[in-house]
Amino acid sequence: MNQKIIGFIGGGNMGSAIIGGLISSGLSDKEHIIAADKTQAAVNRLKETFGIQTSTENIEVSSLADILFLAVKPNMFPTVIPEIRHHLKESSIIVSIAAGQSLEKIEDLFEHPIKLVRAMPNTPALVGASMSALCGNDHVSEEELHEVKQLFDSFGESEIISESLMDAVVGVSGSSPAYVYMFIEAMADAAVADGMPRSQAYKFAAQSVLGSAKMVLETGKHPGELKDMVCSPGGTTIEAVAVLEQMGLRTAVIEAQRACSQKSKDMSK
Ligand SMILES: NC(=O)C1=CN([C@@H]2O[C@H](COP(=O)(O)OP(=O)(O)OC[C@H]3O[C@@H](n4cnc5c(N)ncnc54)[C@H](O)[C@@H]3O)[C@@H](O)[C@H]2O)C=CC1
Ligand SMILES: O=C(O)[C@@H]1CCC=N1
Image 1: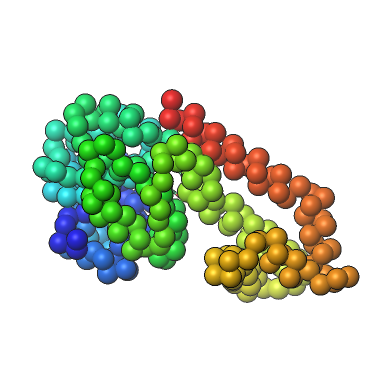
Image 2: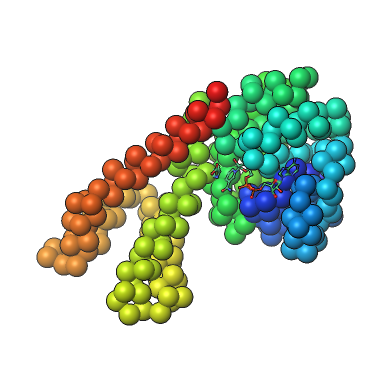
């Protein structure tokens, strides 16, 4: 696996997070990663940060890569795919990480049969804590899909899912780090209002979110039970819980996430 050339078209936020995750995990080394970006500043940043090979020519990368990540914005697909489609390495596997771009839609843009994996990672890939979902088209064998899954597993957790769940995945893990960062910011703001220095407040808030997530993942207990364990009768926590219910925290999260998934569905049309 680590002798294969892994290529990236687009080295922005998500492309960089995956490159950083792959290198930190040791699954791939910088000599086997090559990335193209149209922006010279992005190319310079990738070279300086990761020491990988870079290019401003998408064709150069697509013709070298055994596994080629499409990490540009979805609206760039109709530009980038026609540019590279006749310049792919034989038997290469294309991995799209774009929101709202179905396997069928991407296959149509290539205009000839390709091995295609649709994936949805998230930016915690950079610190080895991503959650990713993957599905493959008919030209990808089970073995090839697992080979790609190994890459995603190197920088976090991943699961192979049905493509019909991909819009839900965008909402629950692809985009959700943004909602969690808002929650952390809000908790830190409240601590700052109570006199805590801001940098200390971010640490306390973030570590509490990390610890709570680990409790859900590692104890196997229902989140409601874990919440109840924090709420001492007549204590402090239940006061906060009552205000969060009153202010509609759950409804806000559900409505926000459903808007996110709906956007992904709309983009697929
Ligand atoms: N940011 C995130 O948290 C996540 C993003 N994604 C997906 O990742 C993809 C990239 O998103 P981001 O990294 O957030 O965007 P970004 O804007 O940070 O990065 C895109 C990069 O593509 C480059 N680019 C633009 N046109 C190009 C072209 N013609 N050829 C080569 N490079 C070109 C840009 O210069 C930029 O560096 C999107 O399809 C998005 O849906 C998926 C999961 C999470
Ligand atoms: O906001 C977006 O469209 C991308 C997809 C998932 C996270 N960021």
